[in-house]
Image (cartoon, rainbow, N blue to C red; front, side, top):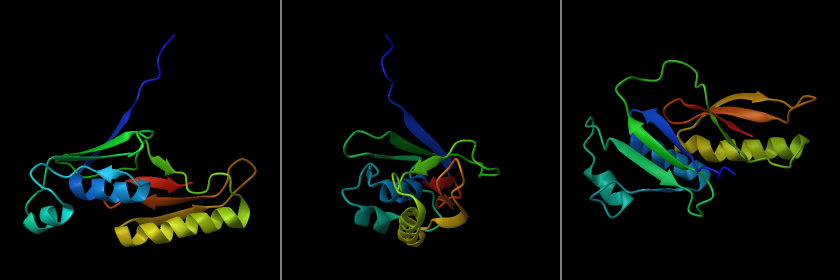
Length: 144
């Protein structure tokens, strides 16, 4: 019998710490502080504008149930639509107006963090409504 394998989801990005902090807020994860810092305030104060930060960052589900997210700096920018994306399950079990309200509330919370609203896909005979979004570096995800 094969055992279930844990997965880590890795993002290529320009600013790993920025993206890790965004996703930790989205998912309620805990972002790991960069080495040598004891607080996010200390890290923020030490940053020099125009200078690259750490090469990598991570955030993890504090309960251990969800996958760890890892962010690594790469030299090239994003040029095409993601082939894989995350669905953030904010409306599970909800339908109709209740689901739309949950999607809109989650969107309103994420916009000040740097998310970009995309297209609202309304329910049809097979699927419930979802809202396309982008993170702080343009990676697509859905509020589902």
